[in-house]
Length: 413
Length: 161
View 1 (tube, each protein chain N blue to C red):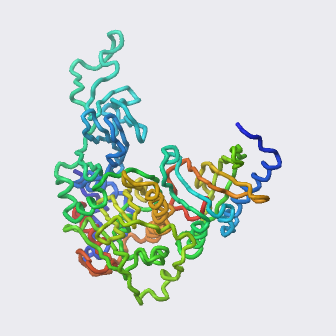
View 2: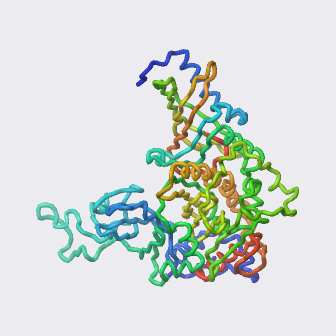
View 3: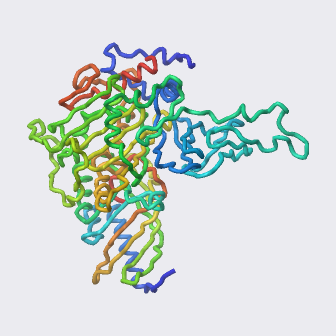
């Protein structure tokens, strides 16, 4: 177990609790190093990949848990495994291709070869060459393997954890979150497209951003103008019991006029699209919810906005670098017209999202804005100072506070 | 290999057309961009891996000039981002004429982005996969797929490529 560093001991969380976030947590390399151990290798389920990316025995997909490189495989019996992509011999990457198919995992450095579960099978020159050299007589391949993670799938999402203490995924998600994931991903789906974007900010700023329903109609002006996600629609911000997962949702059909919006920048853009096919949609959800962004601790998001169904996840690439992945999904039985609607709606989100592209830079603006002010703190009191669901309003930062509540508990801060 | 030869005069017109399209974006004349396309023109930015896998979704997809004009209106009036400029560098296009007269053009490009007060950096590299129609004297893009070498975008894309 890591011990608290000097600088970490000096970090005193403000007395206001989760209603404040000291900016140092976004810029301190010691805290970042501790997160690798306490968050990513702690009692959490990390999203690794989709099961549909490794449909057949022998399929291999690379992933990451925090900064640790991970291999996900499907073995001959169809079971999914995950292990650290670090040879038990000298530590080289064993697998190099992001997607691959093989019946064994062989390190390119000295040809140590593992089966699809990560167990060492053979070592080159184990008995030496022409009777000379070789491993010591007591060398036993059974004692060596790639470091395993526990793996569980839920609705085709493959999760991994290093901790023996993490409860089953469904328990970890809780009834609300698991129910909404099942609603979105409980039927067969396929991958329609994917890309990623580099955000020049600490990973936690995106974790906040994903849970921040307050900013949506203010920063993302395209969205509000087209009446997809405005605070004056029915909707709310619901949190899991422990506050770490959340969902921001709205119902488009119940739009009312909200006087608070008059004259605001967010409402200035005209609603007449020259290309209205952007928002052509079909009814997919019987409960009237047309828009939901789920945040799953620590680094996963599940979204559906109209018919745009996507899994987002983000991976720290350094103290102030984060890679955000977008995987767009459709149903297995989609006809071409539905795929076309999903394709056009995908313009709303992603690296070029008419709605979301600001998130590519806004977190960097915080990273830059807080430089030189590690002792100052964010003020997070919209919707109160506590953590709990906000049934009737999304003008709240309760989801952000929920994230910090979970984070502080794991980090001991 | 050209199935039907492209005469030098037509090639020269096509090269001017492609360069003009890039310069409209580089020179902040972005309102001209949709008019390089036919009314029903198609535009998509897609990573090479998705292009090769046959994915229908890219990073940006416009079906029809109207959606392109909405993009322009959004980047002028709705979207928030740090000011930046593009400089496209186009390679010599490889041209081929289809049986129906459509010109298929593949043009590699490098795209440099300059943030305000920042350095000029390589933002994207890839190729335009174009279907070009000759409408009388006018050339127009029937479809353009912008195939990016990398699936990873730095920060965001708001200006078309």
